[in-house]
Length: 381
Image 1: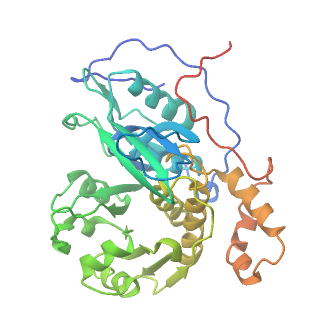
Image 2 (image 1 turned 45 degrees about the vertical axis):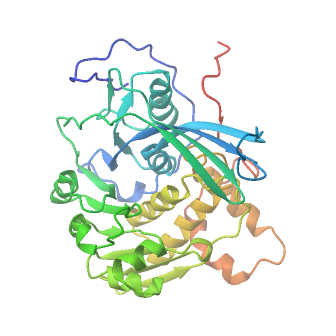
């Protein structure tokens, strides 16, 4: 178990070791590529961990002065934990550097990630007296409304080796700001994949994304991509972005995704899988995790896009961000089930035929429940 550190790097205090969670066997997508000289970490990421509380099954948006009852509720680590969990469930050795609140919420998030998901938190720390950030998300009509609360984030505290040697890192770019760790990771040979948030300044100046020069791939949505490139078509935006980064992936919502690889000359568009969405929280993070997995495994561009879209589609059918991320057994169960549905488009099935060589035999029937969406059930032992 990793050590939790206080504000000045001192041990936070004794923590009772929790029994390890028995998880189903996980396929290693990089098994054929691993050598003794490889770094211990497949993917490194850093950011803010939130406690997410998600209400689903609301008939409409909350109305002022009334009480609404939701049909479903989930609680889970959120924020950067969504991405970390999605990567770990796809079999990648994931290292997360984050600050955790000095409260029960922080304890819950730490244990859920370390014990429940097997994520390496040796570069993370607990900050004394800091309250965990919390987000309440309300899902209705295929969308969500969020309310968040948090105190000023603690200043970053360099770890002895941060970022660590890793095959890949995932960075969330902030317009107008450089993050030195991104350049450090690239200099170590780490492949950096980046997304970006909405530019609140309204500038949409590509020069504000200076860290793209250190990145292998950039994965904005269509609106972001078109604003940064001053184009009116997502495809044109993707091609324009390859002037700044080797691989551009533009997500198109219900229309899927389009990608261009400047180095290989490949381009691909894969349609989205139509599903009934329960909660879209974290779907974008799951998409990125799926694309990174395929990239590290060396798959063709179209297969990477299809896999990323599939994992995102499976995630929106469950509660929450990190709780909803699918693993290989869920993907295998979906693939077995979908092939048995009458009147499937043969071309659509062929798009996912690459899964045949990857997936373990499904051990459980579809649909699957992946999460226990409640904080702190007491153990019966």
